[in-house]
Image (cartoon, rainbow, N blue to C red; front, side, top):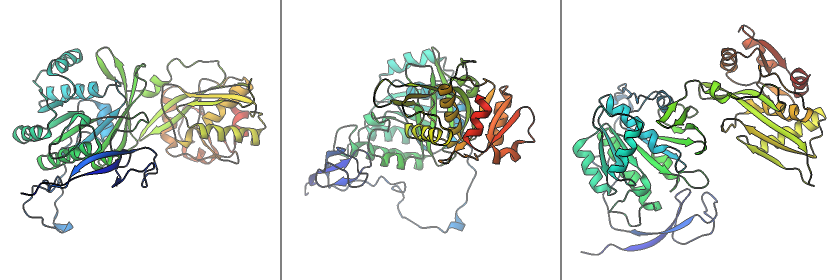
Length: 457
């Protein structure tokens, strides 16, 4: 028999682009210094596609395909089910990413406990911890009424055989960077290994109807380590965010073939594990000062959920030739744009001032509906005039200083009324949609100048 030819190729770690030679910049995604060398074999291996096990490939007419409503599996965690779109879809492949120590394994182990106690067959496969380490961590989270099965293995050939034999409902792979496929050259965690290992798990998930959760490590840029094609292969991508030294955690859906991609779940890390936060708005506003300038409450929509947030701003005269601008939770370019609008359209001399903007609670917001809140926080700090703690500010700000309409204004106003806010500053074009909602005073504004006069006197 002729031996398989072995050759060296280069892969981009960000997008998976393949090249026969090394290049400083990836031609596909234009990233620098992302090309890594991998040794590949040209020997024919078994196909890892979804239909690899079918003896004969046969095309079907669209009208001949019967769609049966699949019952989702209730994970027992309301916040997780919300992000997944209503529960775990049988036969789905879910990628969970996050910083080291953020709580990915804790979240999935708690989910396994709830699923196991509900009578579901769960298999937890770990390539990083021993069985005793997993048991010690599981005992801290609570009692397991039904035995959950554990496996410490990194060889995907053995794992595939066990899954075909036991056919569990839920499988956890912790983590994909430790899995090893014998048919692929390269060490565990390399681009080729991560890609091909995910392809094998995808095949098992679809053919056996098993819901598989894959834990993925992240790079310093906050993206899942390995080729970006990994995110395209799976059905759902979840990111677990937050400061590992703080108590809050946010589970965000980045991609979801079975639901909305804008939903988030909020958790609090305690000694007994992760606890769901049923009312994130109340949690995010806890400790808000009542009479401090530069503090404004606004509302952001995360999927179908309105969340009230506190925006803090500190503006002071600079001691250097070039003013410093810093932002935490908001895009710094957007902050600079809003400061330019305030200076040009309202005459606030912010060109020689340092400015610091912070979204309290650790949230990262990119929605334009918080523009007016950021602008009012900066103006309040510059003028040193406090804004009432019972006032909510909503609106998008244009370059001419106009306040533009925002979507889902009714849900935002209802959330404010529920938490006891008595005044809501909204775009004038949205007033007709909310004037029938009783419980608070509305201040419709056309531009930034009117908003500053309304909230800062």
